[in-house]
Length: 205
Image (tube, rainbow, N blue to C red; front, side, top):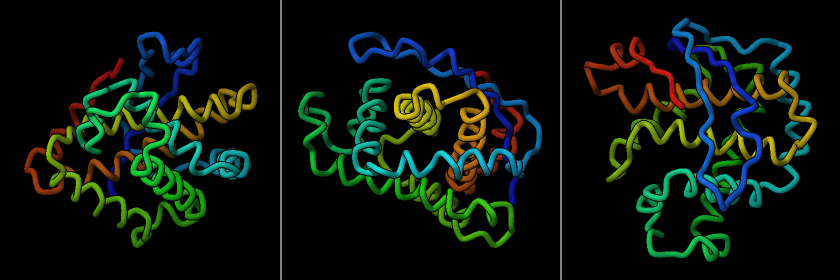
């Protein structure tokens, strides 16, 4: 399995979120250290909180994509909804379906936590292939992976409220970064600059 960078999640960056205000970007700090393991404590935190999040897969998936479009409206071009008003996106069948598939993938990651650090893990193979496929999506930019991360953490805090403790936030943060890094590995797999990409991770703010 490739080298995935560890991450420290700054919960305060997601406070006071309002859809009528400019989005507050999550601060993502990559420590540039090889870390392929999600600790047993983190796995337990993810597994214990997932059932509450899984009660409304389609709703949570939809809210994640609405948040993505708030953070970066240009992403709507990828889904051919650039001319759809924000108030109408919640009723868009394509976005609702894509959101549900996205959340189902998160559920698969949770189910695979005990196997996630093995070389032949099917989920990691799937993510790598999916990352490769994103090379063919016209208009897709690799920095969109960070926007997905932001939207996920934002929705998880909204759902969990006070239950989104620093420990829980960091556990989910670590899992999401691991997944996004596998997608990036696939996305950059045909480029000679992939190793340079890993060495030049920057502070996103």
